[in-house]
Image 1 (tube, helix red, strand yellow):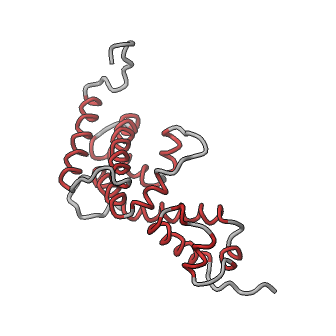
Image 2 (cartoon, helix red, strand yellow; image 1 turned 180 degrees about the horizontal axis):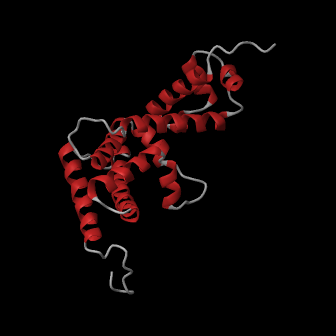
Image 3 (cartoon, rainbow, N blue to C red; image 1 turned 90 degrees about the vertical axis):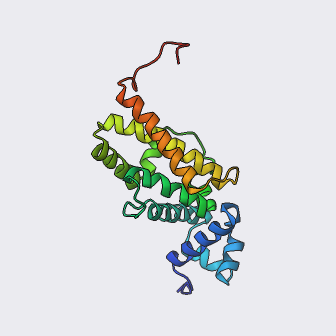
Length: 201
């Protein structure tokens, strides 16, 4: 009978998440994790087939943590859709290593925005519901607004998580509002889905 693992899968994932949160994904290896557990590497490979399996579980745990930030019941006083953006940037500010893990790790191959949208799970679906409910947009219009504002918000998060730029809360709120109004104005103009002739952009 194999020896009983000292740590459960969930406990190992949590400790691995804390390690990545503090030192980044490059620090997640069997030796460092064994040291963080205060044991040899045996409990890690008793609970997981390999480090790749554990890394994927850590990514899922990081996404759950992001979902906690992107909650819709925050008492910021901001509109629901804007609040998700503010929380995403707060996540980049307070958890830069986890933000890097989720959104700044090189993929094996590029994917479309639709793939990214699907990976955002409930957060993206709730955002579309808020947009259609609060601003009377169609699904197609809501997706256009979400895509453009999300890309802008993501870019700000990258600048913060990589310590390229620093913004205070007032600046972030103003920038998100400006981007939102710009895209909403384009949608309301009726020209959001027009294709411009070459050289006319």
